[in-house]
Structure formats: structure tokens, C-alpha cells
Length: 229
Image 1 (cartoon, rainbow, N blue to C red):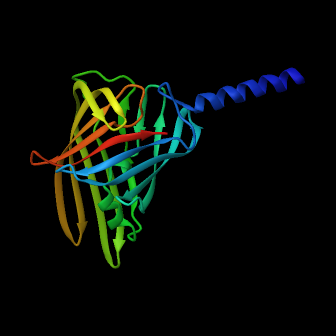
Image 2: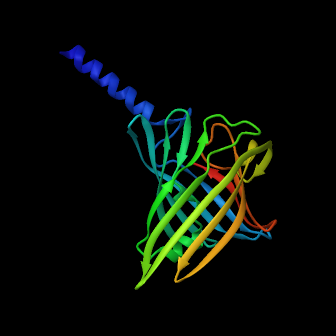
Image 3: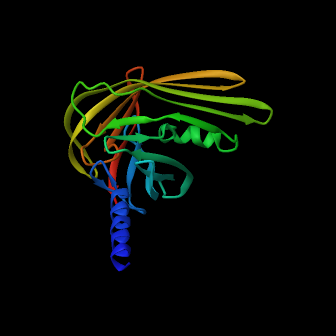
């Protein structure tokens, strides 16, 4: 009986250890990272905090509940939201909710929006020239009596190259991933915004070390990794 209990204990421990691993990266509740946000002219806007609130094993995948918090330049919390990230051993899948801008999240705060995500997928191994899967996000809600819809399509995702990137957290040999994003919002009147995004990703890290957003070829904002905890 003792042997059976010991074996069950070892199996449980093994599952717990496996559930704390994502593509070879150790993850645990309370860990996360911090990004500094800047406008297109390099003026700091504030800080973006991402913290893992929960790690579970579901259907052969490691699932992380990630809390996002936006802080202004004085460190005052502006808003919080929650999204999921999943690892199945070969790829990382991120809820496209994570790509909704702070301004959009604030706008949707009282609209009871419900979102459906076609996840942003990153293979465990990146290579220059690699084409990545498209992603999308659809949301529906209301503003008083007016129906609200939100659609974000992320296409033409490609690993364009590999280069050294220096950010407050250090210097990294990163892959440069480019994509085109179209955001359509309809609240009585429809509006479409098209931007181009560049994400810099590093093997052994689950998040971008830097991201840049362009509109009509002009840099309109960027974020840089400032701390990992």
C-alpha cells in the first residue's frame, strides 16, 4: 500500500513539474514581466505589467492565466484585464485578446463585450523566412441600445530576420516577426484602422522583448522589455 501511495505521489509530482514548463521555459504563479510603453517620438507613456496568475494542465497542454495591468507614468493603475496562454509542447498559443490596445480596452470597459479568439500561434522553434499562422479576434457587445462589434485580423505573419536588440532588460539575439493588422470597430458607424507590427522574440522567452507599431510607414508607438520577475 505504501509503495502504491509513493508511486501515486511521484506521478502527481511529475505532472505538477510538467505543468510548470512551457517550451522548455519554467513558469510559475506570480512570475511575469514588465514592459515600458513609448509613443512614436520616444516619449514614455507608462508601464505594462504581465503576471501569471494561475498555471494548470488541461488536455495535454499547459495553460496560463495572465493578468495584464496598465500603469501611467506615475505608477497609478489605469486598468486590468485577463487572457490565456497555452503550450502543447510544440507551440505557444496566445489569446488574441492580448493584442487589444489599452485605448480599446478602456473603450470597451462598460460594453459587456464577449470575445472569440483565433489564437496567435508561435512555433517552439523559429527560423528566418518562416510563415506563421494568421490570427483573429471577434467581439460583440452593446453601448446602451447600440450594438457594438469589433474585429481584428492579423495576417502576413513572417519571420523576416534575426538581429541584436537592446532594451532596458538587456541585449538579445532576437527573431524579427512582421505582420499586418486590420482593426474594424462598428458602433453605429464603422471605422477601420490598418497598422503594421514588428515583434522581436527570443528563444527561451515566452514574450516579446520589443514590439513596434507603424501606420502608413510611420512609427506610432513601441514597447520594450524592462524587467522579468
